[in-house]
Image: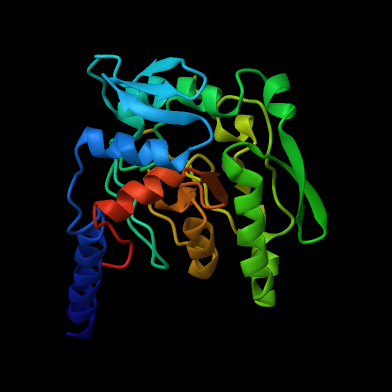
Amino acid sequence: MSRSIDRMLAGVAFATALATAFPVGAADLTLARKLELLVSAYPWSLAKPEDGAIRFRDGSLLPVDDGKTKGHAEKLAAGDVEDSLSQVYPAGPCETKPDVNVDPGRIRSDALMMRLYGKTAKEVEASLVPVDWFGKTLRLTKRQGVAAALEKVRDELKAMPEMKAFLAPSAGTFNWRKVSGAPNMSVHSFGAAIDINTQYADYWVWSGGKPGRVTQYRNKYPMKIVDAFERHGFIWGGRWYHYDTMHFEYRPELIAIGKAAGASACH
Ligand SMILES: [Zn+2]
């Protein structure tokens, strides 16, 4: 008897987890609205959306859509700007259980990232500045306000001493490289990502997952940490089906689009 009730309750919990898989009540915005929010997220570099492209302040243009129809793996491998904005990121101090291939933020446009932060390791390195991270010095890009945003995250979390063990030592920031096992650039290449203490990390690859076939994990980081990062423009790899829970990257456009779409991690 009690065993069948247990099973029933487990079923309810499972259904609840699935129900929160994708932003509940979130409306998908038009591409035009998303592009406006993208431009406002990087005011130093981006001027305005213009005829299917993004106009940069230096006068150059970047097409928004390459016109190709892609599956999830192809979007990850070679995303354009439109692809990079195609999944809604739900922020807030609650965990989410994403459906298969719901990886909001994991799809990126390398072309856009390179224009925002630098096209080569050397060019990115020229903009790196030191950031104190609980007694150790990290290097992040100052471009787009990334280093300054991380300092705000740090100052908030420093006020909660019980968080330090989860945050430090950092497992890395700048590192010019491709995403592990993939053809596209990691955001670590641009000095715009941080891995926190790896001791509490869950990573889909380490857990034996395969692309499109990943087992769920039990998050070990306090959600106050995630909330502080998100409020300053960083998204969390723990909200990806292909999860990477120690990973945060600066993607203020996705936080803004999620908010405008009415998405919340706490629905
Ligand atoms: Zn990382």
